[in-house]
Image 1 (tube, rainbow, N blue to C red):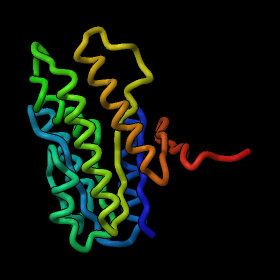
Image 2 (image 1 turned 120 degrees about the vertical axis):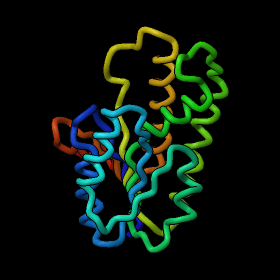
Image 3 (image 1 turned 60 degrees about the vertical axis):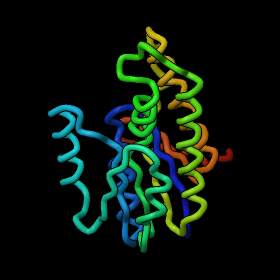
Image 4 (image 1 turned 30 degrees about the vertical axis):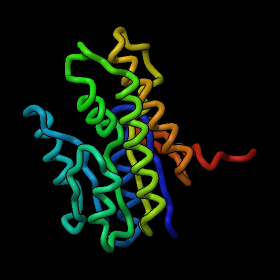
Length: 188
């Protein structure tokens, strides 16, 4: 059965591990979509560690933006598509239109680009016969960022997460390695 799952939570809460576990349990071919770029040595090491943790049989698509259209081109026989992660996808779009220093922020243009990116992904989910497992960070639980660029990023990731959560059949919040099913909501 085609299913879309959004997994959110804080850093190192177990989101990626749950996504991989669910993908393994699906039993079919998996396409893993990696949105990270190795901008420095530490990030390069993280990416390599993640590669080693994935089964060798999984195909990998490295895509920093326009992942919906790229997945449509290569999904093939994949029964499950794992996207890890939406947090970096929004960051990639943000940097493409906002610049790394934030000196010249066109907030409206960045928001338009993020919404278009997420809509493209939702259309992809609707057009394929695969299940989707998407990983994202929940960044709205902490302090309000001290600068405009930080607040804009937090707000745009929050909007992207809301859009995907509305589309998702299931949403999990990860807390200390424990998944809490929040959609569909439990009825008492």
